Length: 307
Ligand SMILES: NCCCCC[C@@H](C[SeH])C(=O)O
Ligand SMILES: [Zn+2]
Ligand SMILES: [Zn+2]
Ligand SMILES: [Zn+2]
Image 1 (cartoon, rainbow, N blue to C red):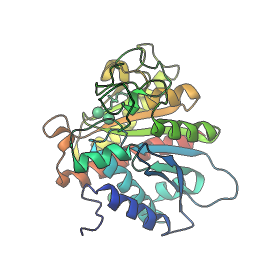
Image 2: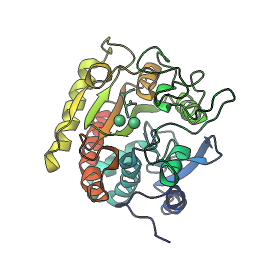
Image 3: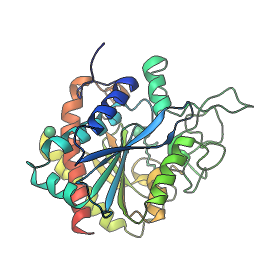
Image 4: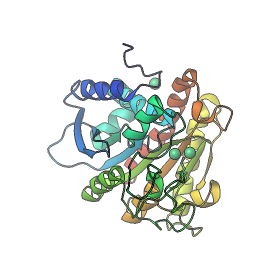
């Protein structure tokens, strides 16, 4: 059977095998922990990148694949891990980052949904949770966090693609991630969540039109990261608060992390702007990931300088 490839959209089985092998590839720089299981019982593997240290280091938390059909997002987290390990020791910025901080990477947040897009419905977005009383399946994890929950830009209809869930963190995947971040909030300085598509770099708030207390700083960093991204292939991103830059949307992981105190909280919407949309060709995985590396490294180095 086809092996794992960084320039293909890997099935969940390939990604799980990749996680197991890469997590044991360099005990000084990477380790793995399971933060809980998905609704259908798949283990949520969190990778921890960073030079091993007996004391706890400041950290960045990045997740991919909240939405099942956004395959370029999941591909990016795999790419990031590969780049981090392969450029540590050569790339000054990555070496400094992993020496000073830890980077937690959740390669696939919504594993059940991701597997479902490979096997059944390519356009599935939500989790695959079931509840008696409704024939419709799943909730939108990015509407299920306890941040203005279900007030706007979300639906209380279980059949909607933006169903907010029966209560905040009703989705076990969201609860597992929220628990981890809550338990580690003293060290987590930044939260980055990867989505597609539209080429946007968003930050809080989406649950209100009110500007965040740190709006101007978050905007400056987003502009710098977008410029870094554009420097490689000229790809243009728009930066701004979610509510006015894309649409109002309550219950998002970024807004929740920000209100918890994780100041540098960003949502990426990767390529493209609609030509292929969620069906971005595999030929664009490499360029998309390379340009996104520049933006993520820009944010990470800014966080480092402002510890
Ligand atoms: N917290 C919401 C950030 C803005 C919306 C992001 C998109 C990604 Se597909 C969405 O969840 O609809
Ligand atoms: Zn998404
Ligand atoms: Zn999106
Ligand atoms: Zn590279």
